[in-house]
Each structure stands twice: as C-alpha cells, then as structure tokens.
Length: 277
Image (tube, rainbow, N blue to C red; front, side):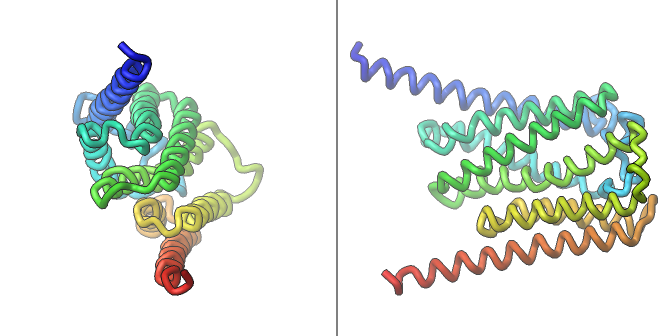
C-alpha cells in the first residue's frame, strides 16, 4: 500500500468518525431535550433548580412560549446530522471544519440540561458560556467557508445561526438566574436598571452579530424572538416591569433593523460589482 493510499484511507476513516460523532451527539441531545421537557421522566427546565429558570423567576426570563423555538432548533440539528452524513458531504471541507464544533455544542447542551436536572445552577453558567463560545466558533467557520448550495446553507448555516441567536439570549437569562439564586443584591443598583443593562448588552451583541455576519437572517430571528418574549413576559406577567419590556422591544427592533441594513448593503455591493469590473 502506497503512502498516498494510506493517507486517503486515514482521511476517509477520520471523515466517517466525524460523521458518526455528530450523529450520535445529535441523538444524545434529542434524548436530553426529552428529559429537559419532562417528557422522559425528567423535571421540566422551568420547574427544575428550584424554579430559577421559570418565566417569572427574574426580569430577564423569557415567557414560556419562547422555548417553543427549541423544536425548530432540534429539527435543524437533526437535519444537519443527516445532511453531513450523506456520502456527498463526507469530504466537504466545511463539514470537516464545522462538524466537531456542532457535536461539541450538542454535548454541551445535553450537559446543561443535566446540570439543571441535578439543581447545579452555578455549574450551568460555565457550561452555557462554553456552548456560546463553541457556537460562535462554528458560525465563524460557516461564514469563512461558503455553502455549496441552498440546502447546505439551510441545514448548516441556518441551523447554527438559529442556535447561536437563541443561546445568546439564554446565556443572559441563565447568568441572571444564577446571580439571583445566589442572593446577588446588585450592589444597591435597582433590579430594573440591571435588567435594562443586560437586555442592552444582548441587543448590542445582536447588532454586532448582524454587522459581522453581513445580515444573516437565522441568528437575528432567534435573538429577536428571545428578546420579544422577554418583553412579553415583563409586560404581561410577573414580575412586571414596563421599563424592561420596552428595553427588550427596542433591543429586538435594533437587531432586526441592523440586519436589514447589513443585508441591503451586501446586495447593493453585489449589484455594483459587475459595473465596476
């Protein structure tokens, strides 16, 4: 056997290992989601950890309806697991660069659910922080390696983007819940002020993301969705806070408008390119 054929065999084996890792990780994440929803004997996330993540636990907690987005995210993750497993995708460079990061995000998500199930709220913070970092890295590689076609864009970029946008909001809510549960008094600063600051930071992250990704729709949709449900919860449920609700609406609108402007700018440059060449 020549060196070239040996290298090719090793590469094929590595590609198959990556595909299997993503597929198994997706399966574990889905099992974890059933546990986290209470459908498989676990405690629903909003009721676990002493209710620290319930819709009425903090001023940053999204309304219960916000979590329905997980159905779409998990569907996308399963679609990606199947897509990257297809023979034609096995040697695709973008899946070689992105696959293990997606697998890591799936395992971190399952670990986060387990931490909440075992009332380890403090441990959930570094886990979701790591999840956010991994998703940023995966999305960065999505941007660096363009999709081959529309299906690849939807299954890969769309899924990772949607996942990233939601986890951005979830991280803010999770950190806030952990601080409140730990008895953080805000250093004398009113809770509503802190809530507005946190919402503003989430909005700024969304704006920066929209500029960075040149107006990608998926992360904006999920991020704006999460912010909108924070607004709904604060304007219609306890703890009621009109200031926080309005701040969340402004943040969501800012993210959407920035995305639209960034998208239009990309299209304008694309149309001008042939004329200038």
